[in-house]
Image (cartoon, rainbow over all chains, first blue to last red; front, side, top):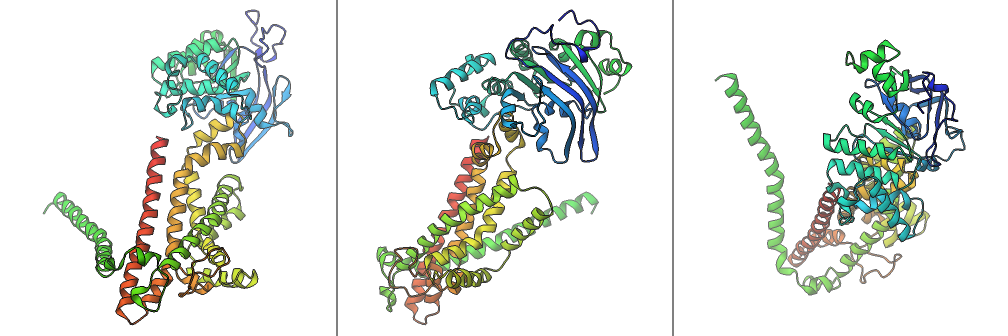
Length: 272
Length: 284
């Protein structure tokens, strides 16, 4: 990936991607989004390569969360939502009419800002995604649950208490549980919407480490307000402002030598 | 007196006024219950509960009316619970927010305010006459179901509204369909609120008299109903009937029956509170 020195990442070809067969490539083409009359996204093109971590940064209301939620069609539930353009995952436009949204979401996991475990046991939380797929094989479910909890680095802490309510866990543990719950379905893409903003520094560090490890198997996009976090964990950084993609490049480039003045002002804390 | 003292005085005055208002209802209730207990408690024994009605006050029991009330309660639950909850779920989760749904919403609230006697007339026309059910337990239960449906629907919607959006998001994001999300997450999370609403609505139904009189529930039924098409009476009607008699013995009977009826509603309300607390604890 070091080959990609040019700033035109948007059109970067796929041949130099080191893909595992699990992770997926995402392409956005001229994407525009409205909420009623308000245009939240004003025509964005972007290509996100497999097995990378991409950070979306920008001030509140810049459209980064809206853009993130396009990839698993979570905006579909928002009243007044309207969208134009294409979003392709592995070459398939996910906004075509016949797309099965439920199937799509099994491929694209999401972790939210506030840990949101179900008010059920730890085990049931992780097994939920499998259960709704109609999987009944107990042994299979047990294995998947354990694997997901190990991946999320939570297994050692909860293995003796799988029947305990998930709500009894600490905030950091809850967020790792939510990650495990997502991983149990074995998606190829992980969307994270400010996953550490409600957590203390130690929990945050744990989750960042986790993201770093998960990169091997997943394509990860993370929305963050924390500049240090973006520079620590991401390979690419996209800076959004007022519904537009101002700059999208390698993280190191964005943070050391940004192309645009606005980006520089934002990351140096002059506004936002 | 400076303004701080003035404000403090106002504060105290309002507090006293508030206590007085709260006590007003409670004191009346205590006086009423005390009075009823004095009149009726001596009359309650096993025979009073298992005896059939009779012309002689001391031989009369509430068996048929009690059984009628239980039949009504069970049938009304079986009808109103699934229908009301399903309607509430539909309105909250599925219906598009447009003018039609707004009209629907307002009218469901309106229905909750319609006097119960009107429901009785509706039941008489539709269930007793057009559907030909006669003055049966089923006709009575259907009528009462109509009466409490709006309450159940509103309670269901409120309970569903109280489920945090984050739970919904989490379920959808894992690939759950709408129905899976409702069944696996939303209904369990809102179950306490829904059950509370349903039980409170049912305890209202148990005490209803007017609509059942119109539908044709009789004061004197020699046998307890054995199937949904049987004629029936219920406790409130039995009480009403006894009170309107001149002999003192029947007044005593009425007081005793009131105690039983109150007991039933208090127990039901107690169960509702229990469910609410239990569910709240689980969600924390």
